[in-house]
Image (tube, rainbow, N blue to C red; front, side, top):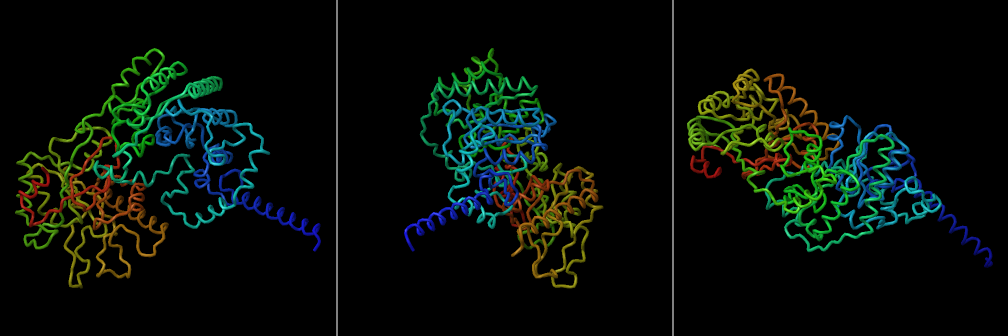
Length: 612
């Protein structure tokens, strides 16, 4: 082969390989650039670059939304569902990593000029005072040409001719995708925010355990942050243009500053912080949530700038005057040019609330069967049970329902001085015959978690060596509920089966998935069980709200918690031992609550020591 033929062959090979790479990257489209459906996976594409993938997504879905919230990743914790409720709107969260105000301006301009926009919420973050017009990665932080005016001839080739391993990764992760959030698909494409299913199902309460899980708060790094005049000027000018654009188009604009963890804000010189927030008020009125008592509570945060949705809900409740939601008194101030100086001075004196003002310790007692012949670790005699309840009353304890815990967490409604939650698992007839009258006698209340499939049952396993212990009926349950002494809640409808005596090789003994069961099948089974037990209890007893679950056997995992929450079971109890810490505003402190197991061997003195 002569050199000319060799060269032509080589060039042809290079062209063919280039075309193959181009075609492969276009088809797989891992960054969500090309607006085609071949291998569409918006949550993955948004994870690689939310700036590009969200614009691509909106080209097909913009008619579903009429309002937008814009800003850096902290803005993801302002729930669009809450905004929709307050403003009768359909919000989409445009959160992008490390957004500077130029990114926000470009997004806002594109949205207003191309789609219907009724409301715009813009988050200003302290880092906007030190970063402006920054693009730390040419692919993951690039804004699409529709927003910047960049030539398509310079923009698209960086994605067409990129390393094809990006596309191979997308195909590989498609095969590994699960229902729960994973690092490669962290966005909820339908609302634009981070997918917080796992975060929302994370039981939280004990501070020591929280600091172990989030060590950044236990040993916060020594940072030294500085604002700069160029960034401040750019940020304020962009915000001014956004404001003018909204006024021109009759769009409601809400500007807010998101909460920041105290140690992070303290890493900036205070005079620079004060200067930035003061000058911000000269451009626009805004709601300031950046620095308050909330900033000192680690459990409200994931890290220095990412806070939990409960905090976002508190902020929105403040903005829209919703007094049904717990809000710390110093959280949220409407700042104008007239009050900015006073506000900044007051902001400098923010300090943590005493723990007793927003947390409470609540023990939970767990009972099962009451039997004159008590002989195992889940039974207790009527005499011992009455002695324990009498001792509680004499010691000044007030028994409360799970809904009282929820009112404390969600509304800030105070608990009695010495609260205790009394629970029973399974729904035995002995609860009706013995427990109910004794509780009523001493002015106590309790919650009974029934197994729906065994309510009123005396026939299960009757032809075996282990016949079922009798369970009360719904008629009896209704008597107890009507008395105001008892609440009936869920121990599942039929996910607490007794393995050796079931007619199946794989009985559902607890909430965990069966061996080999797919995620979809498991979630469908648990969801159906939740629907059935709620319907049965409401129909049989008149119980208004069936939303509390005691895990059969104490077993649960993240998927089960997520599925329970999606089905409205937002308070849950485990069999772990300990006293619970409730945190106002934090729904996660109502999950997987610990309980003390009570039986015939637990003396009155031992029981009271649990509660001390």
